[in-house]
Length: 499
Ligand SMILES: [Zn+2]
Image (cartoon, rainbow, N blue to C red; front, top):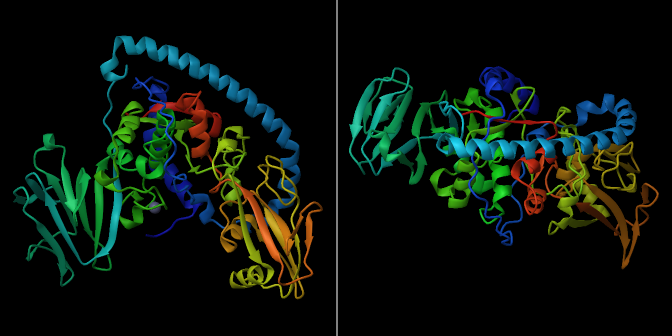
């Protein structure tokens, strides 16, 4: 899959989503009817889903020039921002309360339509596979093959009859018969059978598109209704055992992220890929009854900021303070500022340690192009969660860490350190260990006298820390509804129904 930077993502978003989402403003804040929450207090069976990492794809290096100014401004703004966030979260609670009341009223009148006019549900194109030489399609129901470019029917297939598509002499071939198109669509003939088509034995809702790529291989795309897609995403991203309000929050975040990402992979012939690069999607195999219930209870609902779908990043655990969107090298977004996250403190394995010898660290640094010679010292201000410093972001995450060696001293951006030392997050401090004795980082500098000593990275949280903390949502779900949870992690957003 081709990867795109966060900035491209934003650009694509403005082009592709602007019109559809701004059109929603008129119908904003209508209410849905929620199914009763189970709020099951089951132990989480999963250590948090894979966090999204689009902002991390962009190195923080190109931001160096503006860092000093930002440091000063961020320090000044910090207290102000915290106060504003508190007030805002209070205001949003009131709004949510009103929403709930309004919802109950409307639910009494028109529960079957969610109290709003039905709008067509958009489709999303999900890239399932690229570079295929041969693809086998099958369905339990009768299905039909059309030319996706013209809409003309090519062939009908009876139930359980396989269609094998290959490439010969640079053209698509169906069961040895060449077809004069570069784009094939397989769909179930009778839409009432809720089309399930399999590709190489894996079942999907909606249609399957087979596209002849420029390199004369086949790209497999699932053309699927948005909420059917979210149904195949949610249980990959959060365990269905989790509290229902957390699942609903995840459903809205995943749907918003999908709308934001529409067209992201346009060059590849689809909207989103099915991996952690976009969101993990496994079709019907990935569905669970609880996940589907959370999708249906929030049907069509997304978060917007100034009328546009937001970049709804999420991660496993914040460690006590979420990261601003700029902290992983992305653009600073007004709805993705660092917030304190006391809820997250009950997260299992919130605190972690990664140890390595001084020699090993030096070698990992050299591998990443940061060769300093013999490592003499590490400079990093002491970690205070939720507090910035000249070398730390407002959440306390590492902005840059300085390695002083015999040859030279090098400043390494926090996100880069995370990959070099394989750390769960950048909300981290360092300690120096010799034998049984460890020396904490109290002065903002660790002096290294023994190359066989150990460097201990002491950290909190898992993932990039931006947006929704899944473990925080897990804890909040004991007392809060999903919109309160989302309003805590995405500040100043509105809830809107896309369909
Ligand atoms: Zn992707």
